[in-house]
Amino acid sequence: MSEQAHHTSHSPLPYLLTLIALLFLTGITVGAAYVDFGSSTVNIIIAMLIATFKASLVALVFMHLRHDKPLNSIIFLSSLIFLGILLGFCMIDLGSRERVYPTGLRKVDPPPTAAPAAAPPAAAPAAH
Image 1 (cartoon, rainbow, N blue to C red):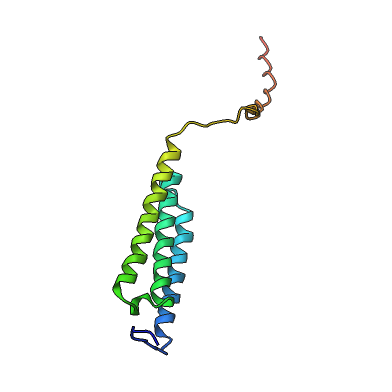
Image 2 (image 1 turned 180 degrees about the vertical axis):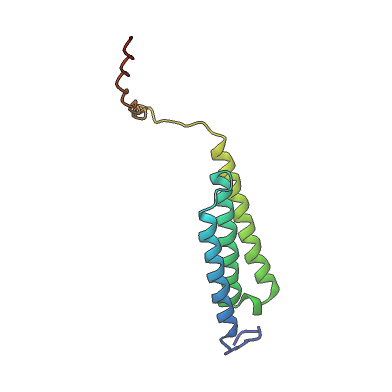
């Protein structure tokens, strides 16, 4: 057996509370998808923050990180933070570049929009 204390909690309460929290956060995620926060980048950041919180909750409860040594939880959460920083720098880098087209392909312009049909000329009023 390992050196760490083996906590065997047979109570379903922590799992039920985790289920309720995950369902609540899923509702927030769906609700946030319908709200425009100004740009698609901000929408993605908010969705990723909610997903990170949900993943941390699952790791703490189902992977039993909350009963493990605190160093393991710190390592897990810091890895999520550094992943977020890496993805943030990637998004900044991609946003600062110009669109590059391969040399063998031609640039395709979007199709022109059809002009609305002209209304028939109005009949001139008859002179008396």
